[in-house]
Image (cartoon, rainbow, N blue to C red; front, side, top):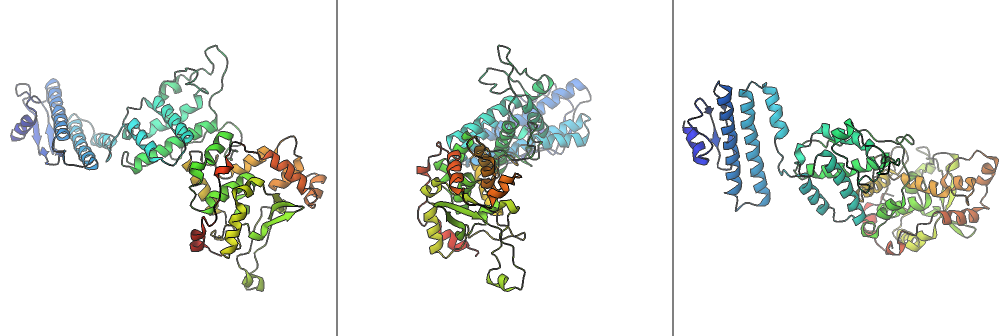
Length: 503
């Protein structure tokens, strides 16, 4: 009864002694920091009275939580306040779990209920969490923020509203959301199509037609994957900031596909290239690979290891056209003179056809690649990326791939295995596939094998490099990229290169 007196003191209206006859509460402890715990609860055998008893305890727990929230918190920081509120909520859930055990719920089920409802360190709604997430993305451009917002609003609509608590979204709901994306009509919001929740969509998929009954497409597999990637990034932030516990439920979800190029990379479209080469973020590059790596990939379409392995002597001139020479130099056998002279000189190309000259687009020289090469020469470097080490397989592409893909994530373009650094090569291949450029010259540019007799003879000749350059430069035209704002300044990364040069 002493414990009940404490309950009455906190909230006199929470318990009516005339209604509650046999409520046994043992070990109920109200802590100074707002915590609440109980060792045992037992209710009246009469179900009606027992339900009233449980409701009374629920009200008591709620009253204690409200009392704790409204008082004793004035001198605390925001983080401390959230921490204490979360602790109080956890203990309230423990109290309710004890009630569940009293009403014959198996202990395992009660424990699972506690685990599923226990809030994290900083509980928040989806909307509040997303607003904080966008504030943390200070370096991304507005178009990328718009893409994140569009993905979030679709997710919130399908998951039941942005008022839901982030930590209460269950993994099964995430899987249902991913499944439902396959049925979302293209431009559904603009067309005024109401989607409903994921369960409703999966049970009754919306009709793929507009208001006039004309057929429309569902969103593409690429768009669905990009949406999932954007929300996955948001949930990563929720977890890291203490707003959700456990693993990210978006990990390892099945990828969407349109039935072709399964598992392969796709080229970038204009919207994506605008975001990638927006000067606001692109000029924040901290290493040469984050700047020149992406530019060379865009304007040459070369394989990543071909770019990463470039020596300064590979920048050549043929018939007045400045080019890069993609070479194959076998690694010298150990303990030979050649190996002792330069043990790290090996270069690997994918095949015989990969050895070629690739004309360098004038945009690269306008951006400042010649000044960068001069800086490297003054530092005594012999390679274009002198900080890239040689791995056990004789390649140097790993860091270029890592830096490039991390940047694509930063600007909200990256989709695992689909929108990656290799997508630049696909972009170039697509743009070279124009009527004005001969297929043989296009294959020579990218290092693809051409089976024709003309292709075999052309590969042995450098006579047509000027024609190849003319056609290639015309095809690789990106007027929407403001190269005047993408300018290398002399000595930009000299300190970084000096500290990290490996050979």
